[in-house]
Every structure is written in structure tokens, then in C-alpha cells.
Image (cartoon, rainbow, N blue to C red):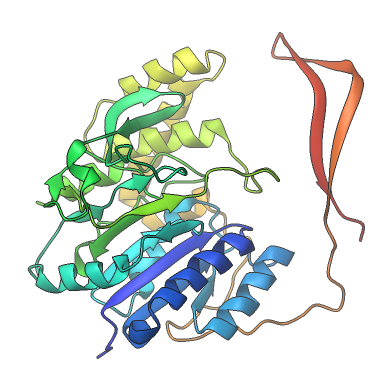
Length: 352
């Protein structure tokens, strides 16, 4: 039996600096309890230069590292719970920082919870200026800007000593759950997006609730001055919403209605029909349905739970450069009957 009391894990895609500073901050602030923490990184792009640097750091920092290149999806956060050595696991984005003493408070809190607890736990997200503003304590279940959920602010979240309170949903930059009660994301998800709200409905369906713990305070890095390295495909996001809404018994028409407004040229109805067919296929042949979503093009040996993958420096590492291009004259492209006008762009490039 493991002596770990809390697993803290992050799924990453080409964010070495985020992983480094997030986990070093956790380790430095919890030196006296490091032996009771189980630190985990799931890498969705382990063969890139950033991925190899992340593996090297995890090896040195005694962080359990698991490459996951075959399924390109944020739902790989499920693996944090599958690999957890502690009874409770907290998933965080690899660019999150905590207030002092937050982890020790969380360890104390989960130690008092019923061993059959089925709840999902969140905390107030502080804004960058760390002022007296009310933090983002939850999300309101409404659609806006291609997403389900908008930041909500409850005054009770301003006092770290306040009691926990129930919330409808929250962003998944940070959440915790008892490992045995984790309901999991749909294996039919692909790409990025669509989890907020959906996972909270699954928690409630199994008899749990979503709570905000005012002491569980964190900040999140949103800015990406060098751009986002992972692909963001709006059709995949709509697919995930359709899959999630069908699974939880919600009306997918609201998904279609929202994206009909934000992306009128997108065949959202067709995406829904494919999601419905895929759900039926999954019921009859789960493995084949998953292979259809995530083709088994790359087969890696299963990584053992306690194994740390050593860093193997390649014979030749690529050097990537960032270049800003100003076209001078406007570049105009016609796409789906509409004109895309570009004045400048940024590219990342390497010579092999």
C-alpha cells in the first residue's frame, strides 16, 4: 500500500517552462511533505524538444512521467487518476501557481472527508493583479464565445477561511476528486475542449456535488506570447460537446444553436449525427470505436506506474526559431466564399 496522501498531476503539450515552474513551486513550498506527495506528468507530445526537456526535468525532480502520444486530447487527464498512488488526486494545468500553505490545507481537508466521497473540488482562481477583487469561484452554465461556461464570482470566495459552498461548474485548470470516485472523461473525446460542465453532470449523476473550497486559491497563466502549440479545431470541440451532451442526457440542440451563431458555415448537425452514430458503435464495440477516434498508428509499450522514463538525448536536436512576418501589403485569401485578410503573422520553424 502506498504512503502517498495526494497525487498532483498535469497533462502537458509542449509547455516545458510551465511544467518546470509549476512543479518546482509545489516542491519548494512543500519540502517537509514531499514524501507524501505523488507528482505526475502526462505528456501529449513527448518526442518534441519541449517533451524531451520535460522528461529530463521529471527524471531529475522525481516526478513520474508518462508519455501519451497516441491520443491527442485533454481527456488524457484521466490518466492522472489511473496512475495515482494516493487516494485523492488533483489535476492542474501545467501553468498554475498556489498561495502559500494551500497544499497542506488540502491534504488536511481531504483527510477529513468520507472515504466514499463522490464530489469534485475546485478553488477560487485569482486574477493576475492579486488585488481585492472577487476571484473566479465557479462558472455559470451559459454559452459564450464557442464555450460552455463563463466565469462567475461569489463573494464567499474572497475569504480563504470561509466554508465550502456548492457551485454549478468550474474551469478545469484545477480540480480534485477521490480516485475511486472519478467518473472519467468520454474515451470518444478528441482534440481540446468540451469538458467543463459535462464532467460536473457526470459527478452529479453518481450522487456527488461540485464544491468551491475558498482556501484552494490559485493563479493561471493565460497569456501565450509565443502562440499555442497544440492544434485547436473547432469541429473537434463541437464533436466533444455533442458526445458529452448525449452521454449525460442533455439536449444537444443547444450545442447546435450556439455554434450556428458563432460558426454558421460549420456543419454542426452533421457532427452531431456522426457523434450519435459513434455512440451507438461504442456501445456495441468499444475498442473499435476508440480506434476510430484515435487510430492506433503508434503503439508504445505500456509504462509501468512507478517507472520514470529516462531522458535520451537524440543524436541531433532541432533548434526552433520564432519569426514575425509583416506582409506590408495585405494578403487576401478566399475561403468558403469569404475573404481572409492577413497583415502579419508569426511562424515557428526549424531546419533539419
